[in-house]
Length: 135
Ligand code: CMP
Image 1 (cartoon, protein in one colour):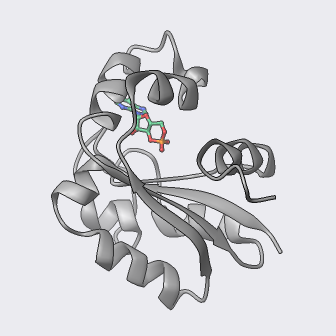
Image 2 (cartoon, rainbow, N blue to C red):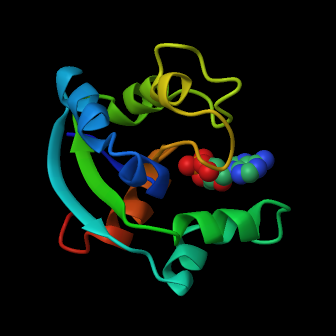
């Protein structure tokens, strides 16, 4: 069964909306098979977002992602990578449709509430990053 990695970002934790977001994921029929709350160290955030190094938003992104705790989870379900990407909406909350998680809960970048793997390859890498024990 396909798996994807989801992160509820520091803004979601600070605003106490993680329960609402988790509810949407479960309501959709997806299974959460691993979950942890953690605070990313700077080096960890830099490793996770290394593909964005050098971009103008990189420093702000690292500062944001290390500003508070996050919740990382592995979600399983048929075509879950595509399903979850549809549910979260476009990266920029301004462009995310109402009804999507970012469209309903976020206002501006980089505080877009949630991250989800965008391909099978990134799901594999990102799941390993947080949950070494999961295949
Ligand atoms: P995500 O797509 O989960 O992973 C990369 C993150 O970088 C993205 O969510 C936003 O949080 C942030 N990001 C992407 N583009 C911009 C931008 N133009 N300005 C600020 N932050 C951004």
